[in-house]
Length: 485
Ligand code: BGP
Image 1 (cartoon, rainbow, N blue to C red):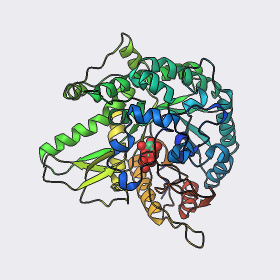
Image 2 (cartoon, rainbow, N blue to C red):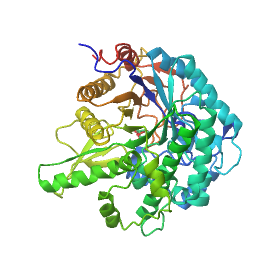
Image 3 (cartoon, rainbow, N blue to C red):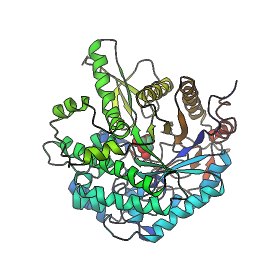
Image 4 (cartoon, helix red, strand yellow):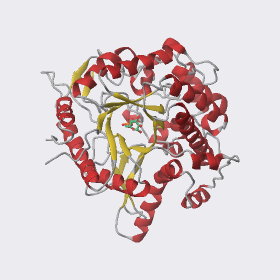
């Protein structure tokens, strides 16, 4: 049977600067909003809001805190110094594409400088040159939860409109500097997460506000405008650029066929869809008005914002997909499930990962078909993976058969979606090398094809080891998605 995947399908893996680089303030880099997020031991993890929320007092203390080991994202996995070794391993698997992000404060430490930090620019130039050596295409996220923390302190992050101009200064600088080295760009990682986690997504503190959602949606609007203006600027710099928007695509099913459950699931799914509507269609969909009313939110727009959104649409739509969940209006159903920056009611038909994320490969096909039907533009799966507590055996092997099973089933469903008519550009599985978890800042939750010898406290040699899935993914890529088992 011939592969469903097109010959030029971009197989690869994904990371984010704040979860891998380390070198937190080396070579001129400024502190990012990721560098002030503390590790929270499992017994203290009340909720994601608790882990990812931030008060002014916590923020001020963290900025001054020199006890680096409390902040795992300050050390990452030392990719900053080991990127050549890591890229050689990606090349050994046969990667065609590598998704990474640029850390804004490595280029503009406080975010307000008029001149960029040359050492920061040089680092990413070296990384792109290393990727080019192996014909690996960079897929670069401009903002992946790592903005200059100074902008959060001074402006309350993206709630202030000043951020648009400052972001464009940063985006323009890197788009021009790397215009001959990078073709594929993403603006904001999981832009819809700003709604629920405004500090993570937009450096916004909502402490003491009677309506935190007002600040979150206003910040999101500024990000939409900045994203559209970045698309505009990019096309002026290099018409060959392909600029995508990026969503956390959380698929929510109705718990039952009761119409009330169907309606509730539709409303939940609309909150992700709203962000792709704005960036792919170019306007706020009418259904969002009722959601905003219910939140008591009034978005302030400047004259010209709507024209900017309408006139600068994304070239492709990328998204993260890990799991699905369900909702119900029946209060008696209490069995809950966790998820990627989300939670919901557990689906009795699905198994869960150790972290409680429900494994649903068919759900990936559902969202691919839904989004392709809605937008008729190319799609890109830029995050998908299984977080698990991998163990290195005495013989040095890491037998992550469970990850192979998870990935193989999801790749199978991508092939089905392509057969259903979906135009899919590529697949960068999340955490192609073990890294610091975004939500919990732990190392124990591993995603990689490559094991990194480091624990939650930062102890370990940082040595890299190939897992069983490393050799499996190499065969998947070599067979263009045909050899999955
Ligand atoms: C997404 C982020 C990634 C990645 C992923 C896995 O929200 O874009 O940075 O971390 O989630 O989540 P976690 O690391 O919390 O398991």
